[in-house]
Image 1 (tube, one colour):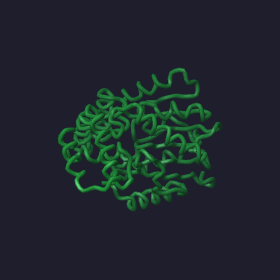
Image 2 (cartoon, rainbow, N blue to C red; image 1 turned 120 degrees about the vertical axis):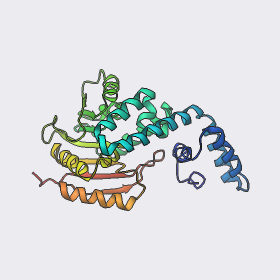
Image 3 (cartoon, rainbow, N blue to C red; image 1 turned 30 degrees about the vertical axis):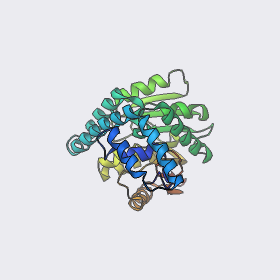
Length: 288
């Protein structure tokens, strides 16, 4: 277990375990059995994970319910495309907005707040966000990153295919003069002019683009290049969920070559809480 080797956070360790157990009690029994024969350090880490599991029983049930909705959506994608994703995230947002944008939060606002702060610090430390930057958040969900980045940017804009998510994001950003939220169609950014942004962020949203097929990925990547000012940066946090880092890196490199990006970070894992892989793709200055 990666948690015992200090290779993942408690929320991520639990997220991986939840798929194998029907309810919290069965998972707790498994952890009790796994404690036999461990050294003191490993036993202490397992005990901490057990406490975390016991404290998030309702969240585990919530995530299992949401997981079933994700599976249904995946099955419907070939026939329904973006409509299936729109319906999925409307339903998830109605169940629990916090878990809807990050299953690993288990509906715990404190976990999501910590994860959001890590993402913002990553962007700040790499000058992706700064006082002169105009940022676009693709698949902005409930607007948590818009709200967090607004004080650090010239302007922040969000786009999402889910009307319920857009409504939640708009409510969250109410009163932020430099923030706006748009309902999108999923395949393009036609509502935004060329070179409108200095940074485009896709935080855990690109796997859904990929699920629509390679043409959808290429088409939206070209749209990202269009709306980015020369020298602006496209930041991808999770390219896919397939668990193949090498394949993700190869696909991102191919997209970059096709769309006029360079790759300055490929598949790094910069976060302590979230297990996302990060890619940073500046738009080449010489590309018209």
